[in-house]
Length: 70
Image (cartoon, rainbow, N blue to C red; front, side, top):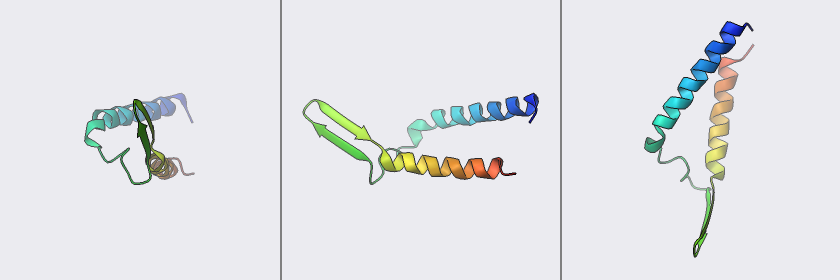
């Protein structure tokens, strides 16, 4: 792959990441799905979005397979 194509792909990825961060406040379901771990006791809180991480990973894998399939 040439340098030009690589730069275009990187630019598109940056644009998509920017759109994702701009819409971050509107994606309230992400991080609050059933299966996400949240403990709070006193002044201590622990939060780990297990299912949200799996969902983002699956969607990312599908998109990458669609765009970079040979």
